[in-house]
Image (cartoon, rainbow, N blue to C red):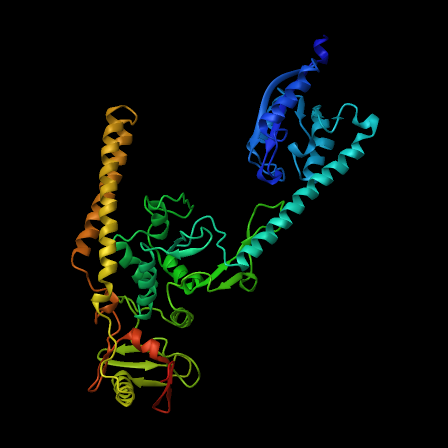
Length: 501
């Protein structure tokens, strides 16, 4: 055999889920056997390597096996490529045609497709080039058809209220009865409910995040990891993902917690583009009563209204003032609280209308006291630490579990260091990190030993309750559920209630 006629041939094999339920001929082993038989009948093809992409779509051209093959072509170690058929190389007719018609001829690479009977050496003389274009177009159309069918099937499942995400939303788990339904997570659902309640009490997102972090409550990302889910993010800045105001804000805006399964917020422009784009909210899929809600729809709606209003917290405080986002001026602008020494008043930033706070609270308390007595209310609802007892007990159990994990980690570090799997520097770095996590968990347990009062419930950092004559005290959360707004009109108060008997 003339050495000049020997081709340095590489075999390329690919299989993906888009190929359906493959038979033996479509499997990687089947492709390998077919190519080996072809090579045995063509001694001029000298095998120099095999490249495999198992589980990769033919629409994508960033496959690791194909990338390695193209690198070998650029180095000159491969000048012939052998595949079972065109669809194994790619299903994107534009990219496939670019390689077969321009790149490979320019590099002097021979391309062979066994079942298609295609050989790039003789394709131009025999007219197979036109046949190649049609076959590539058919392969591309096959992927397009699969993409359309898959999108339609996902849309139907969303309409049926079936959860399509890879990992359930924080606060939920997959239902034992149906894996595509959501059910409340006993370990995380109480935290979600507490966050909504605390927002009603006047807490800011930042104060809630700091409070949860100080008590050692795992953030959503850390909680998923504790549950064994593989979760990664490029935004994490610490060894452990922490609670942040943005995390709390996302929970408060999440419609799924009210029992409305919201999906389809992102999608790819088409089957050839992998980058996902966010859709307008009116195009999202919403399914009512798809799963048990963690908060009532009315509570979720009320929190949403508060988030759309001005609920900024003054410096040095953990919660808003009692009437923040509730007191309005006749010009339909919410009023802000100001103080000069002992002089406290509420003023409209737009028109300048104002009223002293003692007069305002006195008038409001008298009106509400009459209302409560009229409807026979003997005691106003107030927050009590007893409502949080179960939640605090749950957090103590979680922190004890994490403490045991850190102790097991320390023992593993010592064992690996003694057996030489870790260098002394690596062991020291890991041990320092372990000590930090261990100390942080112990601090959280000490705070949880006697359930503390949240800072936004304290008089000096949160809204003071409203005193009603001969009735009792009315807390911020009860006030925002009772009143939609209070208008100051010519020195008089006009109350808009959210409920009626």
